[in-house]
Image 1 (cartoon, rainbow, N blue to C red):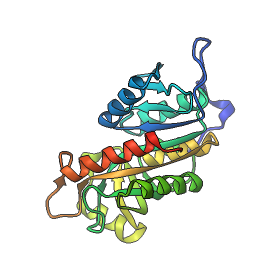
Image 2 (image 1 turned 180 degrees about the horizontal axis):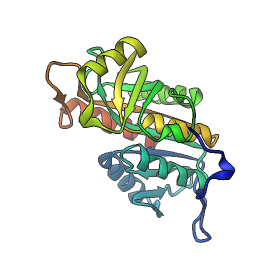
Image 3 (image 1 turned 90 degrees about the vertical axis):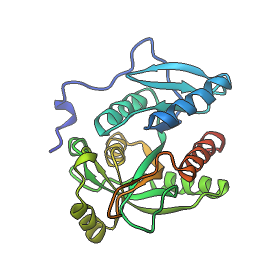
Length: 241
C-alpha cells in the first residue's frame, strides 16, 4: 500500500555540490552495457559524475547522460530516483530479458508495451500491478530500432525479484492469462517510479535466455545476442532520443 508523500521520512535530494544533468538519458541496468556506454561517452570527451554505487556520465555536448548498472528493482529504483532529482525527465532503458514463449528467440528485441509487477518495489509507488511505460518514448525506441535494422516486437514483461524461483508452471500461466512474453528484474518497478514522479520512461530489452524450453537455455555468450545488444546500445547512443 502506498504511503502519502508528505508522510515519507526520506526524500530524494540534490546536494549543493551536485549539478543538474540533461533531461534525456539512458539507463543501462546490466554491467556490460553500462561499462561500454560509459567508456564511449568518456572517450568522446564526456564528464564523469557521482551516482550511488553506479556510474553516471554526461556527454560532451551536454545533450544526454548515461547511467548504470542498477541490477534488481530496489537498486534500479534508487538510481532512477536520484537521476530524476538531478534533472532527468526522459529516461530510456536498456536491459535483458528471458523469453517465456518460442516466438521470442535469443537475440531478438522486446519493446515492453505493458508490464506486470512481480517485484516488491512497485507497491510502494502505485496501487496498480500493471504500471505502464511512456507510449511516446516507446514509439521513439521503435523508430530507433527500425533505423538500425534489428528484429523487435512489442509485448508484456513480468518483473521479478527472485530469478532463481521462477517456476515453469507459473510462467506458463502468466503467458496464458496475462500474455506475458518475457521476464526481467527491473522494468515494472522503474515504470512505477517514473509514473509516480511524472517523468517519461520506456526502453528495450534484448532476449538473453529462453525459459520456455524443457531445459533453460542461457544465451549470454550467444553470438547473435552479443551482436544485437551492441547494435541497440550503439543506436541508443548515436541517434537522437
